[in-house]
Length: 117
Image (tube, rainbow, N blue to C red; front, side, top):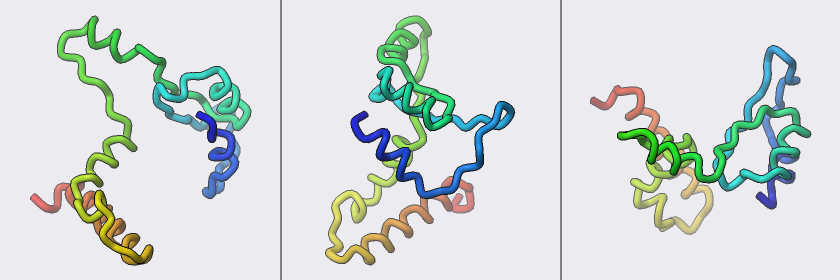
């Protein structure tokens, strides 16, 4: 929450200009459920999609069989943690670690496309 402004200012990818018809969403989890963050999201012309605190717990109580929605980043981190070489960094050189990271991402992508089955 404290580094939201710096993160938005340091976005490396050139963004198209948001318009009324082509809005740009910003998905954040409940750790960013603060008015200051919502103001920053609006200042940078994003449409906020922020999970409110306690929203998932209420949905679980109301609906039988409700499963919490995993965010893309959390799911990806979970997949990356299955690679022990990435989880426990054995490589001392950054370029070797980056190569292993790219290999792991490639394997994850390959598995997701169903080509490995």
